[in-house]
Image (cartoon, rainbow, N blue to C red; front, side, top):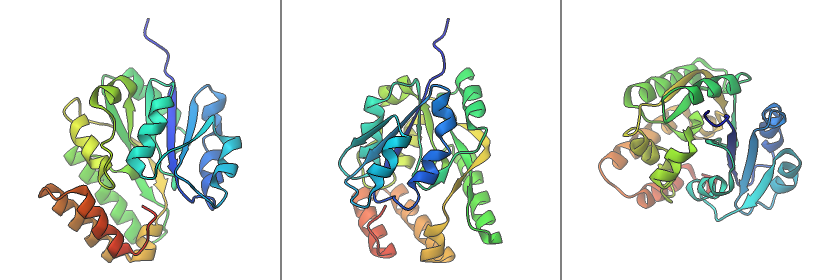
Length: 235
């Protein structure tokens, strides 16, 4: 008989006190059903760890950087499916049923559709294009809550420890194993990136960075450009 489905959710965080409780509270029903929640903190000094600890199975510490943090969480995970969830992204209520269907499929990995939290029509347009692009290319961004079978993740060596585009990079390798399993019921991700940076400015920035990535520029150079553009050090 095949092993039972056990999910490990890995949440990389840094200075997320304002929203971490809301993120983790949504995941408590999964914990009561025997699934695992791991929070990986990168040196927060705003109370994130204290807020997260009662709501997670484990809170561990690592160097800063989403790729590094997600690898650290995966290294202590017990589940046979790993789901990597950004701290500002909420899973849909029926996520477990959808992930169970994935586990019963022959796909190696997958992602959710995404919806942005902003109420304007432009946010719905942005999300539609993100989902269509992902469906056509077979690539996934971190906002879409990538999930993968543990044995596949380990065989590929996990995330490359790069400062940006780690989601696109691992998607390119996973795509060689199988096309992604796409869950239509969306995760909801915070639209603050577009609201703070300006919708069109943020769209152009992200497309410009992806274009430079496809041309072969290093993730380190792209990360420097990204931080210079958005004027913050949070990503």
